[in-house]
Image 1 (cartoon, helix red, strand yellow):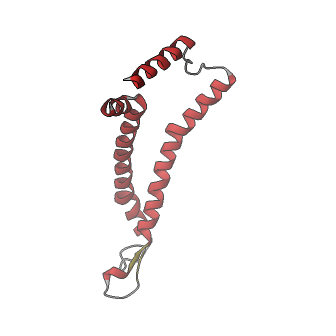
Image 2 (cartoon, helix red, strand yellow):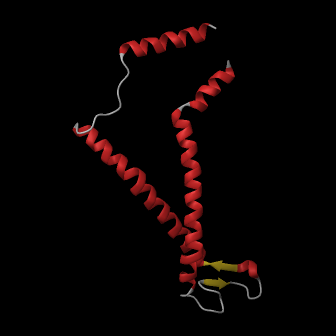
Image 3 (spheres, one colour):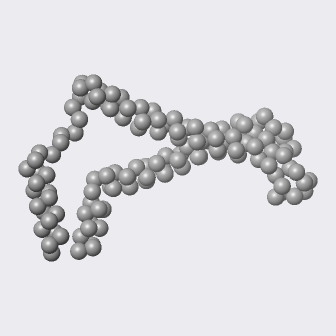
Length: 131
């Protein structure tokens, strides 16, 4: 009985969609990270001194563990902004436009279940509970 509930949970459309979104999001984040670390960070490092290796400050000379790397922080911020912009323009903005059209009545929303469908679902749930 517990495995049936788990199977129903896994086979729901929104769980599968969420899993696909996580995989695609991870792949996209990898691409953006490669872009920012391979292209943006070297461009930022041009600003710093050649001895320090870019926008870096070594607090204790000769101790590599005391290097403060400003270019890595700037690159991470640019990375975040790129991902946030893509999420906004590809997901949030289109969904907001769709929601606006639905509230104005220009586009129909998802169909509501009928009374018969709801009663059949309640009946099936009661039968499953009796077992």
